[in-house]
Structures are given as C-alpha cells and as structure tokens.
Amino acid sequence: MLRIIAGKYRGIKLDEVANDSTRPTTDKNKEMLFNVLGQFFEGGIALDLFSGSGALGIECLSRGMDKVTFVDSNIDAIQIIKKNLSKLNELSDISAKVVKADAIQFIRASVDQKYDLIVADPPYLLEVYESLLQLISEQEILHVGGILVLEADKTRAITQVPDNLKLIKEKVSGNTKFFIYEREN
Image 1 (cartoon, helix red, strand yellow):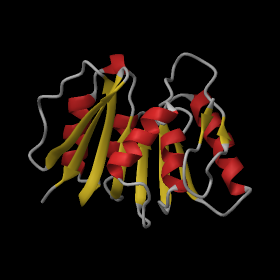
Image 2: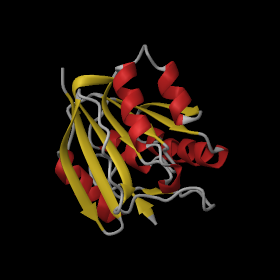
Image 3: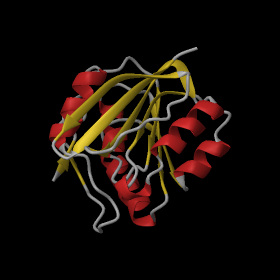
Image 4: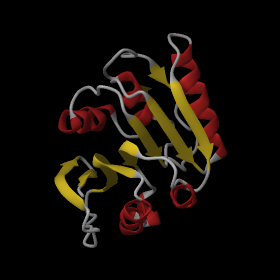
C-alpha cells in the first residue's frame, strides 16, 4: 500500500499501477529521500519522470512544491496518476500536469521550462541514467542550484556525469540507490 507520508496530504492512500511495468518507491525509501532533500519545500516546480503511480511527485506537492509535472509512457500509469491527483483536488486546488510521453522525448521538447527539482525512477533495466544526466544538462531544464534525484538498483554505478552536475549524495536503502545531484553554473 502506498501512502503520502508527510505534509498537508499526509496519510492519504494512493493507488498503484496494477501491472509489473512499475516498481513503486517504498515509504521507507521516500522518507529517507526526503530526509536527505529536506523535509519540506517553500514552493518551486518539480518534474517526476517515469512517474508510475505519481507517488514521488505527489509527495513533493504534499511537502510544499507549487507545481509538479508527471511524465510516464504507460497509459495505466497515467490513469493512476490522474486518479491519485483527484484525491488531492478534493482537498485543495493543486497545480499538476500529467503528460503521457517517453521521458527522453519529453526532456528534448522541454526547453521552455526549468525545474527546481527533478526526480527520475526509470525501469532499472532501461539503463538510461547517464544519457538522462547528459540530456538534462544539455537542455538546461534544471535551475542552477536545482536538485536531480535518480533512483536505481543498489549495484548501479554512474561514471559519466556532466560538468555542471555535482553529486552531493549517494544513498543506498535496501535494493535501491539514490544519486542526488545539484546543478552548478
């Protein structure tokens, strides 16, 4: 069972995608991640790539982000994200955009938008980590000082990182490894 673990929507249960195409971030891992990022946000715009159920982006909204864009290529995931967001809309007016698209294609087309936080949880076997870093850097969609989080299998190593992205934390929890980068000038 997924739930929102902190913030103004704390405790709300979220639906999961009912197939094997997604792997939800556990509550334990979400809590650890937000302990590293900071418990709450004072506004900002986030991008949730490979969103699945939308749990990470929804957690960002609950913790104070102003707006989140959710991107996933799976139609079942898109429907679940919309269903989960509707639970929040009943409580307040949230600002969220849901896009059915390949994450790489979305980034290539998103030169007009910059984000304060990007979270990406691609399928582990897809092996797009280094190309995602490169593309995010090239497209300059992350604000200077913005944070990029990649969720991967605990055995994953990332060796090719663009010069303007600095690894600030690498954290393993269970079978998952989080790479946390900050965009520099």
